[in-house]
Image (cartoon, rainbow, N blue to C red):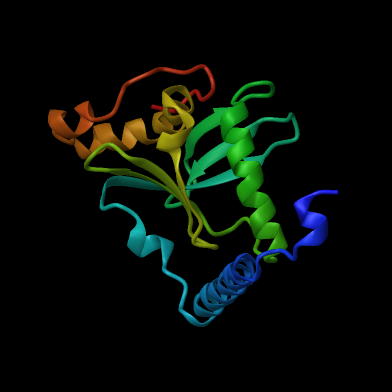
Length: 177
């Protein structure tokens, strides 16, 4: 027989464990209630200031490709051919699924934006969802950057602003220059 069988468990340890559990539950409940009652921060206001941006629409084609057009004039910005562009396909599939769950169509554009410090983001203008493309690596980031490159050239940004962006050509997107 051990000491645990004959002596009661220390009361102070039980009270401390119970207080810890109670504090955790109260804290979690308070945070959840605060988030429900507080207005949601706008993704647009938290996005970095853009030096270049482009509103785009993505449309699946019958041959399995994705047609990417500029929302302003419906001109071709690029094409993702079948079997290519896995990153672009994955990102857009996730954003489309979010829109479908909210009963939003394909009409509102997505905003691809480059900030002064070189951060590249994709904003779903319909849902406010903001994706920082930096976090997926330089190659994946470059596949979206190629869509913005003609915009940078046409705006004649300074060499310093353009130099913040690593220039990589990818086979994923053949941008229309």
